[in-house]
Amino acid sequence: MQLVTRLLLRLLAVGTLMMVLVLILTMLAARRDIADEMQGSQRVGQLIATLVDLQGSQSIEAQARIIDELNQNDTLRHFHVALMDQQGKRLTQGPSETASESGLMAMIYRFLASDASMSGYALSLQRLDGQKVTLMLEPNPRSESSEAITGAILQMSLFASFGLVLIIAIWISMRMALAPLTGILSGISRIEQGDYAARIARSATRELNQIGQALNHLAEALTEQIAKQRDLLHRLQEVQEDERRKLAHELHDEFGQLLTAIQVDASYLLKQSAGQPALESCAQAMFENSSSILNQLRSLLAQLRPYGLQGGEEHDIALEQALRELVRQRQSRGDAALDCRLTVNLHASAVPQRLAVAIYRIAQEALTNVMRHSGASEVHITLLADVASHTLTLKVADNGNGMAHASVSGPEGIGLIGIRERVLANQGRLELQAAVPQGLLLIASFPLEPVISDEVQHVS
Image (cartoon, rainbow, N blue to C red):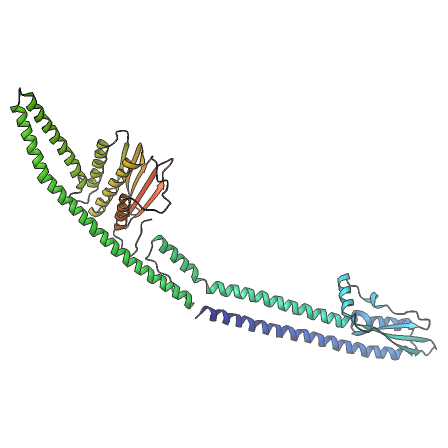
C-alpha cells in the first residue's frame, strides 16, 4: 500500500472517531440544557403559585423567603424576582447576594450582556390585610451567559482534543509507516562498511519496499563484482608469483653457474699468478667482484622466492621462518640503527599457502616503506592468530614520521596499492592508524577459515 493511502485511511478513521465523539458530547450537553429548562419551567410554576399566595394571609417575611429560594442558583432562568414593600424597600435578596463570582467571570458576564436591554417589569399587588407590595421581574442574563460560556468551553475542548488526537494519530501513523526506514538505514550503513551479505526485509509500504529491494539488488551486484575482482586479483598474484619463481630459477641456473665458474677461474688465476703482482691483483679483484655479485644474487633470489614458501606447505613454521629471514636480510642490508623486532604466535593454526604468501609480501612491502620513507629507529612486526575468532592479524608499527596527510585523498604509492590488493584478494581488512606516541601502525586482518556465507569484506 502506498504511504499516502495509508496516512489518509488512518486520518479518516481518526476523523470519524472524533465526529462520533463530538456528536455524543453535543447530545449530552443538549440533554443537560433540556433538563435545566424543565427545572426552570417547574420553578416558574412555583413562582405563579407564590404570587397567588402573596394576596393571602401568609406573612410577607415567609413569602420573601420562598422567593429567595426560587431565586437560588438562577433556576428561574432569564429573570430575577424581587419583592418590595409600599415604601420601595427590597424584602428579598438582590442578584449579587445570591451568587458570588470572580472578577474575570463578572467581566465576561458584563461583556456578554452589554448589548441587552435591562428594563424590568413591576407588578403591584394588595394583600388581604390591605398592605401593598410590588413584585419586580428583573432581567437576569446569567443563565444564557453560562450556557454560552459552557458551549464555548465545550467547543474549545473538543477542538483542542481533536487537534491533539490528530497530532498523535499523525505521529503514530508516520512512525509506523516509516518504521522500515530504520532497517533501510541500517542496510545502507552495512553496505557502506562493506557488508553486502545482509538483506533488507520487505516492507508493507510500497515506496519503502521498492527502496529496500533496490538496495538489495545493489548489494547483490556489488557482491558479484567484488567476487570477480577478488578472483582477478588472485589470478594476477598467481601469475606474479609464477613469474618470480621462473625468474628465480633462471637467475639461479644461469647466472649462479656463470658466477660460480668465474669464481673458480679467478681462484685458479690467483694460484697461477703468484709472484706477478699485477696479474694477482686483477685476479683478486675478479674473485671479490664475482663473490659480491653472487651474494647480491642470493639476496635477490630470497626476495623472489622466500625460504619456507617455495612449495605447498601450510605449516606455521614455514611462514615464521620466511618472516625471520626477511627481517634478517633487511637489517643486514639496511641501516644498522633500525631496530627490527618480530613476534609470531600462530597457536598451531594452519595458514593456507596463498594467504602465507600474501602476508609475507605485505610484511615485505611494509618493511621496505619503513626503511625508505619513515625515518624510524624502531619497527615491530607482529603476526598473531586468534583461535576464538579464527582471525589472523598482521601488525607493522614504527616510530617514524607517519602519514601526515593520510586523511587527504590523493594518489597512493604502488606499494600501498599492492598491499590493499592483497588484503582484498584474501577477504581481509586493512587499517592505517597513527601509532603512539608517533609513527604509523598498519593492521591487516584475515579470516583463517573459508567464508561459508557470501559475505564480502572490503579494505577499510
